[in-house]
Figure 1 (cartoon, rainbow, N blue to C red):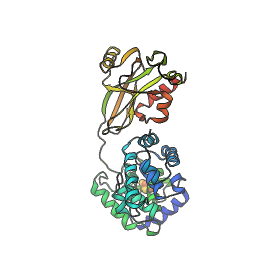
Figure 2: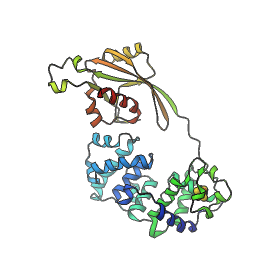
Figure 3: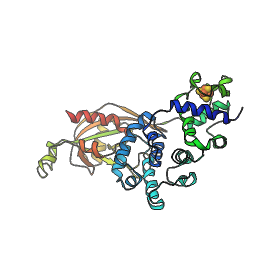
Figure 4: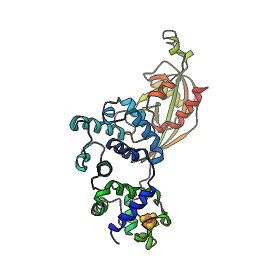
Length: 367
Ligand code: SF4
């Protein structure tokens, strides 16, 4: 097993110069834009991130506007990207940058590492891409490329292996093009040295220097920990609707408000999965119609009609929700937040775990 050496630098950069994808954050790599894109890209594909990035920077164009954004706006901009703590940490870090650095992002790896939500990878990416500091930025793509180049059978999930690869990159990273070099390694992993046993070695600028290719074992690498099996949770979701004609307060409120059907949402707790986001009321288990009615009445909802809907599944990193749902026409408010559906769609962040039922209500309420 060899170590990566400086010979990869020139062909890799030459390849990157010809093949780098045009991405919105690359065309204008300000510290804020690089940082934001790196956080968005942590769990999400490039193509999916692009429209989120444009929308986010359109509404919150700089660190100051991010620092003072209200929670609902921030969550709405992040809606569908998942891992919402990333957005909360972004804002905490922006507030810290306003308070402690006069609104300017700190320009070195060690200071960046102190900010909330910024780990060694993101600190390395921002320091090298936005500020040209010669530090590594090692993500899953880079670990895979490194293990294959070296024909290394070390387990890349182990911190000491990651550390060793980072140190190796720190030794060879070119000072004058540190950001490009890190991006080139990641880009090679994203478009050529693909995961799941599918490297496109025929298109690779490093083929002549790659031990994994020479020994024909690249597709078997890297070695990493098996993923833990996901836990399956059954849930029953309630799409509770107040039809305006059934609304007992209809004659007391303005006509324009009372003439819209309203849907109930409730806010999740401030910690745990999907913390602080909005949801359709739901409970553990798959309840039959009778149980569903009893459950709702127990929590103070007066059930009118109740109709069983389709099932849906949502996959999180460590768990899966298997959902059934009921559409329920209700009298009274049961202590929930009721809003016209168009208002919920415009202003409330509903996680994509509920996407199947969100789409259903989109079409139901259009009719
Ligand atoms: Fe990856 Fe193949 Fe290139 Fe080696 S030759 S770095 S395995 S794509």
